[in-house]
Image 1 (cartoon, rainbow, N blue to C red):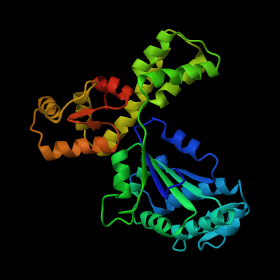
Image 2: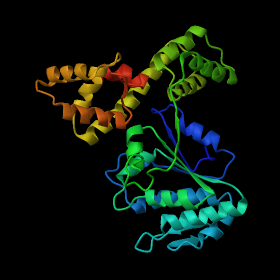
Image 3: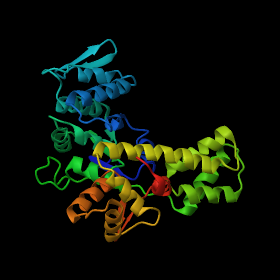
Length: 336
């Protein structure tokens, strides 16, 4: 991934994006920012972003203090003891200046520095500042830095990067795209088998088959089951227990989205799609029956687009489906 100036890694929640990114860059100098914490924020300021960058820089600088010498040249940045501090008033540092210093550090070492922004789509909430011009500047001028943007809300991530907007600073620039899909049945079963073997746990093949049937190929849920088995041992009910616990997690995530969007119609759409999936006309018919009112095409298009952009549903051919097996199972009874 670091061989490209910009790499975009996408996939549904818990499909293994973060693990892939960290594994593929483990032997490279890396600055890692997880901006998931902004998911519930109504908006983000440049100061809030700088605070996360400051924390990431301090983690990185703790492994090589020479980076601090390069950062000293950045206006609005101070070195206090062994930590980097930013001014957050009008003298706050420019992102381009920080990136230039990091590029010089990497050039002196003859290495490529990777900057990872995980769940980067949350930066679409930033107000009064955009990091895209600085990224475009780095793309054009800084040869020792590469960026990885990872996200589970695929539509929002592309909207944030504005890859198809001719007025975007990043328009026309090449981005390597990596899309992760859930494992197929055989690979899912093998994933569980090897995991149990590494921990010296013996399980019946029927146990693995049932687990894959209910959890599909989403690595996050398969790993969650594995951790439960390691800590509690194999039991007759453990798969159903994991499904129940996971259902509460996804229901909470979905209901936070519904609350933020301010419409219960998203709940009805999820119920309409259910386990089998549904076409546009089937969803609209279901909504009109449930709500007792006409649903216009423009409104349905907006509702579906928001669900797709936030990673809760996907469109495959003419069918809308729920990619997360846990949300799929919980869809009929979900309450928000």
